[in-house]
Image (cartoon, rainbow, N blue to C red; front, top):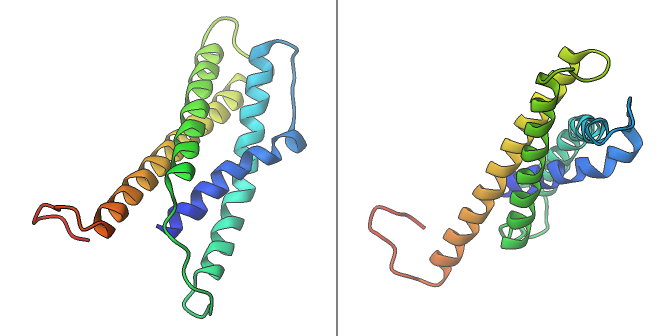
Length: 153
């Protein structure tokens, strides 16, 4: 579960880099949305590997610190909401790019960036769902709730 915690943190922290990687080509809302998604793609490309390395370093067996608790419902909920937001906005950008007239500049390159944002949204959504499921299982096991015989705690 620690892997998913640091993956979620990396995916969410990609949004903090968006203002620094801003590259807007037009002045309409669609251009604004596409620029934000492109900045998010680049930001996640930078932050996800960094947070995974830091997470591996902090949770390694050589670390003398106790292992942190599994990620909670708050991180899972925020990650699910962020993934859903990114996915819906990326789908809207893809539809805008496929329409007539297509986007500004290189429509194929813009479509690839929108597709990467869709993939990012799906991955973020799945990571959030896995965190929520994992936390629910951890709580159920800690409370000694009736667990079906085929499930293991």
